[in-house]
Amino acid sequence: MKIFKNVILLLSIIIISTGAKAQILDADVPRDNFYDKIWITEKKPVELPYVREVEVMFAKTIWQVIDMREKINQPLYYPTTPIQDRRSLVQVIVDGIREGAIQAYDDDEFTQPLTIEAVMDRLEDEDEYTDEDGVTHVTTIPFQSEDVTQFRMKEVWFVDSKRSVLDVRILGLSPIRYIEIAGELSAEELFWVYYPHIRNVLVNAEVFNRHNDAQRVSYDDIFLRRMFNAFIYKETNVHDRTIREYYANGLDQLLEADRIRSEIRNYEIDLWEY
Image (cartoon, rainbow, N blue to C red):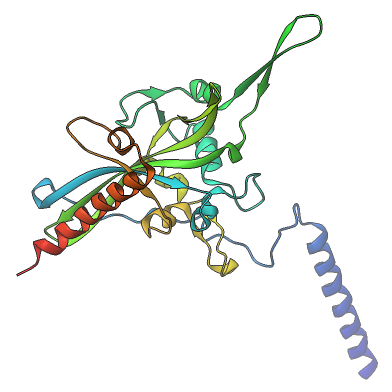
């Protein structure tokens, strides 16, 4: 009886080990983890509070620049080359445009839509050179995500009387690439995207968390939680001018940007002061 039990135990071990070994061999692609990460890929955008026109007591439209060379903004810039679980912000947007999930526009009022072909032509660059025989050759340089070092952002700050809060809504994003013109670097707006329409794409794109790999967030979370730094370069004005157009000095431009920001915040404070 004891021998019979030992035989049964041995056969069970062989069957289990064979099944485990077969399970490992049948895996299609090895995963770079010990569990399946599905939280980001299955996320849906957080629904924002509905706001009626009559509830908006104050509103100010501003344009800001997100410089991804700043340390706090680097999760938006890296990786410059896509890896298995992460892509840069501009790469996520460009991939969405290429797949037809994101509509690009030529202006920050979102009235001039661009075709996919037009966007791809803007992203690619051309390099001309003349060989020894005097023949000019044109080489197409594919888009490199590391060339985009800034984003311009259009947003509206407003006071909601129903919730008694100062809130903000992002309207659009525009990747900026610097090109050399007449020996000077000039900012080039590649295109604009309407932020409310791209949230479905950004919410499923994972962003690096320098503190905890198990608690990563999405690009949509980054913007909703304001986990970035930016500076104002324009506000709505009668002349439709940027700050640089009426302040040439860099320090004066920063002081003017701080004044605009303080004016918005002080409105909410003064509103509830007795």
